[in-house]
Structures are given as C-alpha cells and as structure tokens.
Image (cartoon, helix red, strand yellow):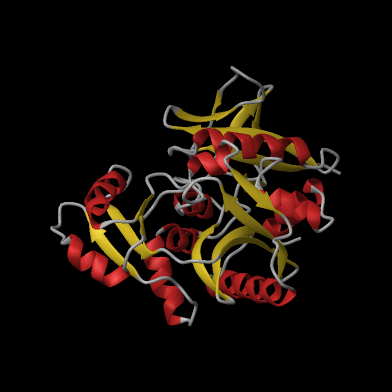
Length: 326
C-alpha cells in the first residue's frame, strides 16, 4: 500500500519566517514515516522549493504544487501548513490550495483571513457574546486625536498592528505622551492598527483541535511575562514563564476551555488553534486566535499536548487524517 504524500509547508513572507521553519522541522521529524512520505516545502519571497536537506532547493510548479524527485513528478496528497503569518495564516495559501484541490491541515481560507484580521475577528465575536476588551481602530494616513483614543479605551492600553503575529510592533502605553509614538511604531508593521484597554488578570492560552467532528480542548497554559507583556522576547527569548497547566481554579479552567471551544466553533475552524485570553474577575476575555500556532518542541501547543498525554506523532497524525477526512 502506497504511503500518503505529505508536504510540510514552512517559512512564509513575514517576520515569523524563522519561527515557522522551526515548526515545520518538528512536524517533519514527528510525522509517522511508516504512514507518510514527508516532503519539507520552504515558501519564501525568493520562491517556493522542495528542500529535502540544507542548501537543496527543487522548485515547486505552482500550477499544481508539484516538484520533481528522482525524475518523478510528485503532487502532495495533503499539505501540513506550519506557516505563521502571511501567506499561510491569513488565507492566501489556503485559497490557492483549495483552487487546485489539495487539502491542508489548518483553517479554510475565509476563517483564516477573518481571524488574522484582529479588528474584524473582534467585531464578529462581540456579536456572538464573546467578552473582549474595549477597542479603538485607526488606519494609516487618517488623522487621529490621542485624547479621543485614550477617553475611549483608557490608560494603560495596548497598541497593536492589526495583522501581525508574534507580538511584533506591539506597545503597552501608560501615559498620554506615549500614545502617539506607540501608534507610529505599530504603523511601521501594518497600515491598520488596534488599540485596546489593558485588562488586568491572568493570561491563559488554550489549544483546541478538531477530531472526528468534535472540538477537543487541551490543558491550559498560564503566561507570566518577565516584561511588561508577552512580547516577542518573552515568547522566543525565554523572557517569560509558560506554566502548563495554568495555576487557576477548576472552575476557571473549565470556563476558559469551554470558551476556547466555543470560539473555535463560531469561527468554523479546522485543524488546531490556540486562543489567548485574559481571565479578569473570573471572566475569560478574548485576546486573539492563532490558526497556525507554533509547533516547535517548546511551543505552547506541544507542551499542552504532552500534558494531555498526546504525543506529537499522534497529534500530527490526527491533523493530517482530519484534513483528508479519513
């Protein structure tokens, strides 16, 4: 019986390129080699390549996502999507693969695009009764008044690029004088920004995956940043504690897991997501959702899987099988 051909897409066009390579390598190493033929695919601004080892790049034919291996044309049966940021987390890759009828492991193109746009995602979820912080939106080159902004969201507040991951371009603002510089910093990353009230509580992240038609919540992770907030250095340079399971009550654990599953379902997600919350006075407030969360060994979702007694091989197998509807 022939093996299923799995292309593991990694890289991308954003500042999360190297982070994505780490996720892709872990997935490639942990997929079951008895069941799957595994093809690492690097997508970069230089081009799309099958890269079986370092410094080997075999071009991808974008007409059908094929590539040549030992004079044989390979078309993957499924793509394991580990790209953080564009084009793998904002819907572009998903739309392309849908057009050429190749399934992939993460959200479909519209749910991916919706969740990647923080402003649109918040607008939708608020209408479903999901608790979110007060927010204010700005577009580049449109005049704004810092007093109006601060009156709406209060201080302290967070200023965020609307469409960026890994906490790139985010600032925590405590005084009115800091607001305009923080806005301009965020505009360096995106031409749309989001300004939100700084919630006070425990930051918790919850992975959710779809398995046989139902959503399964993983154990919770508590984020304790050594910095002002869970910024890039806290995430990737060890300047934080990530405690799994979170040091919260059973009631709060059940409440935040239930809300993570609820949001996964509302947004019609597939594959695995990681949803970030602040629990303030017992209520989970939605921060954002990642449709392609980090999958390197020390990333949050793999830690949660281990806590649940789920090996990476089993988790990745579930994601591939779900994408193929097996």
